[in-house]
Amino acid sequence: MDTNSNKTINAGLLAYGMSGKVFHAPFLQAHSGFNLRAVVERSHKNAVNDYPAITSYNSVEELLNDDEIELVVVNTPNNLHYEHAKAALTKHKHILVEKPFTATTAQAQELFELADSVGKQIFFYQNRRWDSDFTSVRKVIASGKLGKLVEMHLRYDRYRNVIGPKKFKENPVEASGLLYDLGPHLLDQVISLFGKPLNYHKILGKNREGTLVDDYFSIQLTYPDSLYVFVTSSMLVVNPQPGFVLHGVNGSFIKHRTDIQEEQLLAGKKLTDPGYGIEPADKDGLLTTIDTDGKKTEENIPSEVGSYLPLFEAIYQGIINNKPYPVTRADVLTQIEIIESPVTA
Image (cartoon, rainbow, N blue to C red; front, side, top):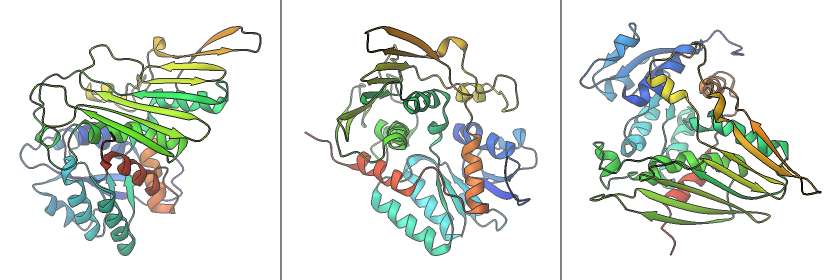
């Protein structure tokens, strides 16, 4: 990687649950520009089993008082993101914040102003831009083979028909519910492709017995030149549909949500292991085009190797060389504006 510097950035994680263990620690460890220095573990001290040199603090406050730490990963529950991001910035740390960044645009703007006042940077953990399945979507759109895009559907579904144990997701606290949980992933992918929509229409649903928060959402976004994008997520889909469906005047592209990184990391696979990030051969997307004579052509579109390491390289370059980070403040403000807006009738 082109670090252009021998500088090593000391990083700390505010939690070592699945997010810290799977999505952050392995990449901070693998990137030569970072030193995974510390983590917050309030009860069970597990991080040392994976990273023997790591320091485990008992509280967020203890980690933030570590003057050696320059980058803080805010991967605590959704309703604490704003509080912990603000605390880290106040301690003059750069921050990488899990989705959702904040619950409201007002909170986001306040953090932007604080970061500017203390001369520190905010990075947004929108890792799904680097999923292998999404890279194939980008590739097909960039190829122009679909012609003018007419319609696009993005889905992110699960089947969990019972109320989960994580109270911050299941109780009606700030930034709870499925829209705040998975909406940032889907909306960021759309915004990264097409920018801010002209308008949007949003619906929410509560379908699981006893649920106190939304477990279904669907948003229709309108873009120039009659392009309509639909993002949908449900907790009650037994047979998942394709994650990406695109229709253009010259053809269609169908792709299941098949990035394998999370599954591999949960199973203990290392970034350096053979096969990391490579989708199974039978998971290619299907591109179907039609020519002026009405002849259909089908083409399998393989995905590039999935890796979240470029996200951490972008953070490194942002801190060391002040290079622009791919996920912008404007992108995140658009995303939060849509999420926090009232449901349309």
